[in-house]
Amino acid sequence: MVKDKIEEKLISGITVLFLDVINESPNHNVEPGSESHFKVVIVSDDFIDLKAVKRHQKVYEVLSEEMKIIHAIAIHPFTSEEWKERTGDSLDSPLCLGGDK
Figure (cartoon, rainbow, N blue to C red):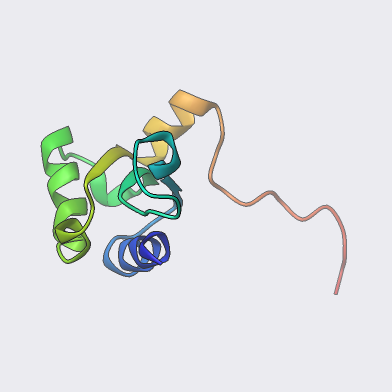
């Protein structure tokens, strides 16, 4: 599946803290089961000090093969600090509240 390949490539090519790849193809006039339109929300501190264009280029570079078959992709790249400001969610794991072992 294209969605799975996108996830695998991004995880192996960028230091991903959070990733959500959504197949938006059913929202478009395409054949049932198509994988041609995607939305990617990606959080990585690899994006620190990079302007939006450079962040997108980094994603395009990692997905160079997949871009040959994807009709449309919406990329939403954030640093962990930007993500926290936007959502209020920290990407840190919660502290363990029990268990001495």
